[in-house]
Amino acid sequence: MSFPLLGLDATNRVYDIKPKPGGHLPFDFHGTGEIDLIIGQVGLSASDLLDGFDLEICKASFDGKKFHIPDPHLTFAAKTKMEPNRRAVVGSYVKHHQEPENYYSMQPIELSRLASTTISAVRRDVPNAPFYRLLDVAAALPDRYNPNATTLWARRGTFYDSVVISKWAPPIQFNNWCCALIKRLHKYQKRGIEVVDAPTIADDFRINRYEIQFHGG
Image 1 (cartoon, rainbow, N blue to C red):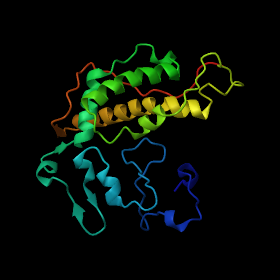
Image 2 (image 1 turned 180 degrees about the vertical axis):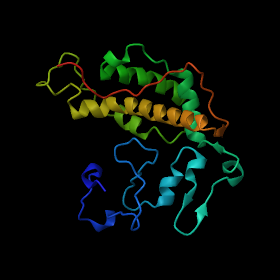
Image 3 (image 1 turned 90 degrees about the horizontal axis):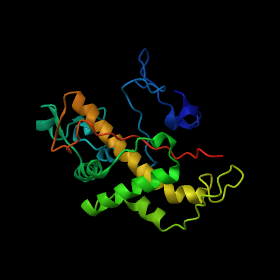
């Protein structure tokens, strides 16, 4: 196990995960394989983590004694449902999102404002989804972004300023979360999994992760 990569203390036996003798731990720390390692906060159970997955088919599990198969009549038919709130948000985000042609050269403030416009439309469509708390916290923060303070040494008012980042980063993070959900949806559909009532996404739809990174200086 590459403990430093996980930010874990190798002397802590709680994380001393090893395969059985002669076996191999099926996780690729370089990210080139097909198995993900999911780490939860202390106090969360494996069931808690599974309940947070967006696709029901991903909640199938083996706890060492029993297999747990959600919606077996769908799972064994290579079909699945998407968590309803996520399905609603993704469907709305796809409807309202417009990918800029030059997003690689855009500053974080521009990307945040662009994402905020889309999110405002999504919240009108899906007002009660439980994913907006961080956006509301950010909206309540003071706005001390200063477009004229763009050097490394003038941290206050730039995207080196923790208050500015806390204010403007959440819309970017929300965009990236929707991007991840959409790409996961496509990944499973390409594997032949039918996602029941999946959001309609046009073949030419484009969405990319945005970086919270200041390009000036």
